[in-house]
Image 1 (cartoon, one colour):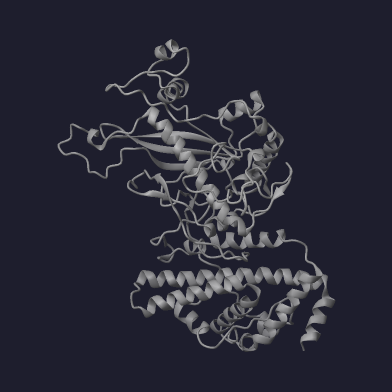
Image 2: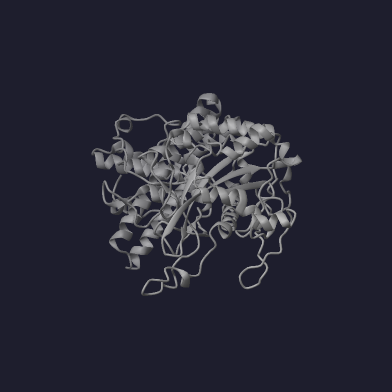
Length: 553
């Protein structure tokens, strides 16, 4: 790939796309020069960290050790994908969930709609998603919009991503609130003044004393013991997802303790709301019957990893929900609410935690068969796709800026191309109308891109031919892939503006070069995919291509 300066030279000057004309393989005959033009070298592979959503980590300081440049995978994550047609928001929202693991004072940050879309694209989950598993995704109207029958497949659309992210964020916030309710019973938050009272100096005011989320593990293919019992003994629907969250507690002596929580997520499609706007819950909204997203149910509890947590689940929380200070008091109260008081005479506060019933509700029971189909789909997905779920035997534990995990591949560029190729295969069957549009597009390209056509045909050196290939791709892109073409131009403008202001550092310039190079890679993938579809269209409807070609001459 050419450097930043040479790329600016190739793209700068001239109007429109006249300087960047390619000859699409599916429309025109190729010359001997074109067929012998050198192929750009494959991108250098590097070790990349992914978060729990299988997205490359975004970080301004992320460096590719192979060349000491900002990693292109970071940039790829915030740019439109090669098969995308609608621009998506890149704004990220900070959660209310405190971070542990040495990141005290920070909160976790949620992915933007663009990042979430790229994650789904990378994992091949934009189509053929089971309806139940897509329940958290919602649509633009209400959370129950576009609901189909039990076995119907739901398509995740680009236009739905804002709703998908809103649902996702609301679900995680609701999960954290339930974790806090457990922690208030098992390990009440202590004042910073009570931490390490024997120390010579009091802790700083910013010292974190409440629980913080340190690690996150997605285990969609592992059925928790409780979910197993509920399903196989009580005929309860299966969860569509499972998470294990590790939180860090702060003790009175200043030491910390890690505790694991198990979360099962259920989908009650019959309870979904059709109210306009219910597909966009607020960050402080809730899930379940009393929440904004009534179709999502969350079962949160500490893992049975210690006697303390087991006691809390069996005895501590049931007592706290009744306001009882002891088992004896609960028995004396006849199993009802207690009237115990704390050390200063105030009535004991009852826990607000509401556990999910062991037995399914009537509406939830109607989704039993659907949940089985979703579960089978999850298992099949894990077997067919590398890096999905716990069947790989990989712990997807996360402890960095956006829930990091170890890489499942060492080349996101290759993954991007594979995802793009898969997207081409998943597209609907080509119609005569599609073929006519493809033919018209190629006619525009051949008419507009004469200079780049000549440059490609007459190039001599490897560098000249590579530049001609870039010009060809960019010119074709403005007609084939307008969104990706616009993203490349925006990257160029952003870099030019930064440089003109004189405020850019070497890191900024390096990041700008990576962004431009990545945007060009994505555009190239899009053009290649478009060309592949157009070739299929020409083979299916050659007469339409000939008719359009003759009509434009």
